Image 1 (cartoon, rainbow, N blue to C red):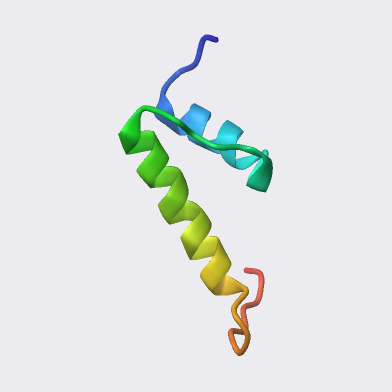
Image 2 (image 1 turned 45 degrees about the vertical axis):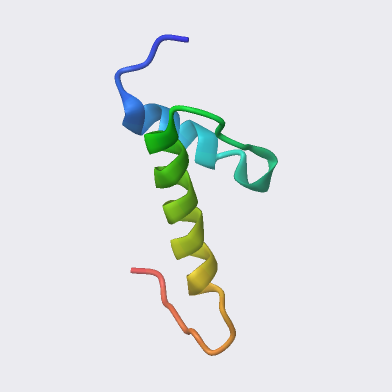
Length: 52
């Protein structure tokens, strides 16, 4: 796969949602985990967000 960088791969992996699992590199694995954790926190009960 050709890509312009890690950002492209990160967005591509995130497009699969819960159906994807990054095995390596560890840095990308951590970035994906952090991104998904932040998204999960937005949906916790009591949190309210609006689109900008």
